[in-house]
Image (tube, rainbow, N blue to C red; front, side, top):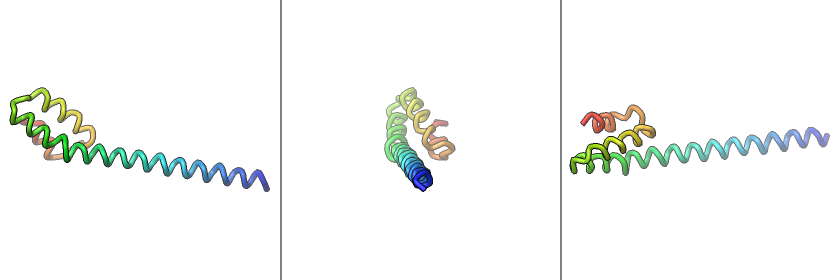
Length: 79
């Protein structure tokens, strides 16, 4: 009986740990995507307007990690 209780407790702890890990991963992914949309893209536009092509290119590369296939980002990368 106590072994069954221990097994259940271990299972619950593992389930909670997995849920927490998933929550942290999901939050970080969302935060990165938000950064790319709200900060990186406007900064890329600004850098391109200032003729700072290398800096814009490097920021596009970084933002594409969080927004793969984003049409607006692809358009900026082509400029």
